[in-house]
Each structure stands twice: as structure tokens, then as C-alpha cells.
Length: 299
Image 1 (cartoon, rainbow, N blue to C red):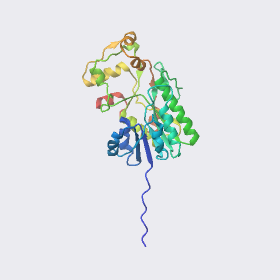
Image 2: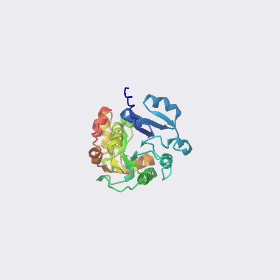
Image 3: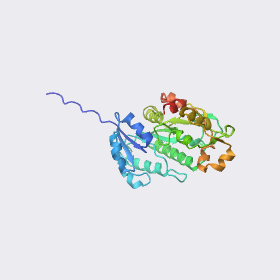
């Protein structure tokens, strides 16, 4: 008798929650090694997700009753969904954790948070050891999500990684290139009033998520940013020069407060320079776009 051939081992199951632009960039990086599921609140996206190699699961983080089937469907989760728009708690992440906890199959969890959790650092340079100090409800919701996920991960033995991402850009990302703002003639702050901003190319953030899935130590947080250290105005000046467009006009902070919205001013009220050595050394991630100059030039 001939021995029966061994059937291939089943691929591990990965669930992506919030599969927008970055999630779609992740799919080509994982679909060969993982059986990928995607939670989507839009049935109309099902055909697009299937074509990209994922199994769509229809559910809505704002409607916890629609998440019942998530328990036990995945060995690993990438959570890319933003919190709801109001409040200081992230009800969406709470609903997701409650659904996943029903059968306890998850072993690894990657969460994309925001560098806004640090608040204003006055332009200081720092790493992930800096305590969080959120200055807006938007950032407080992210801090709530991080704390919830840490408590859950420690309680049930889930291998958690948190990636704190700054401004995400890419030429082929909707609203992801400063070109649109430059064409509108939008102003930036005068140099003496300006703040430092931080950036990550969408492709590099996708690669960072995958690197964390494979290489991160448990319960570890990473500044998922490139090595740029630029004032906001200098960033837009660079983009203008690369695009062959006029540099944006400059406003004093007092003038900006009269002309810009409260949301716009909130982004111009926090200044920080982030150390990304943990991202590049521990995750062994070689950024495709190590500074915005490379990313804007290619995009």
C-alpha cells in the first residue's frame, strides 16, 4: 500500500478590522501566508475584498450585535479602525474585544493608534517611554483603546503590539499628498510660530503592521514614523518645490486662529519629534521611504 499524501497544514487566520487604504496595502503582504478575513460594514465592498484575496465578514463596530460571528474566526487580528467621532472612550474597540473574547482564539493582536496620545511636547525629541498626555478627546479615545487592549491582552495571554502612527501620506492615497492643499493656496504658520510634525508613508505603515505581526515582543509599543524632523511649513515648502507649485503663504499664530478651524488649529498646537529606533531595530524594518523627501518625490 502506498502511504496517503499528507494534506497541507491549514494557514493561520488573520482578521483585519478597518480595511481602508492601509488595510488594502497590507493584503498583498499577508494573503499567501494567512487566510485573511476582513470585517466590513459595507456589503458593497465584498467583491473588492474578495478580489484582493480576503473573505469579507459584514459587521459594524457601532452595532455590537452584528459582531457575534467574530468569536473564534481568527488567530491574529490587525485593528486599523478609528474610534467613533465623539466621547473620551473608544466604544468600537470595546465592542470588538467583547466579540473576540467569546471564544478566545486570538493569539496575536496589532493595533494602529496615533502619536496624538503624547500631546504637545514643545518640540522635544523622545521615544516610546514618554508618558501619554492626550490634549483632545480624539487622542483620549485612542488612549482609552490602548489601555483597554493592554488589560485584555494581559488577562487572556494575547500578544499585543501597538503602533502609534503620525500623519499618513502617499501620492496614491485619497487626501494623502500635500499637493491638494497647496493647490488650494492654504496657509501655514510663520516659522517662529511653527510646530514639528511627524510622518509615515502608507506603504511603510502597512509593512510595519506586518513586521509587528511576526517580530514584535509581547505588549510592545512602537512609534511608527519615519526619520523626518521637519516643521509643518518646511514640509509644505518641500512638497511645493517638488511639485513645481508656489510655496504656501505664512500666517502668524494670531492670524491663523482667526482664519483656521478649531480642528486645524488643534494639529498646529502640538509639536514633537519622535524617535523611531525601536521600529527599525526591534522589528528590523527598513523603511522604503526613510524621510518625506523620498516619499513625496516618488508620490
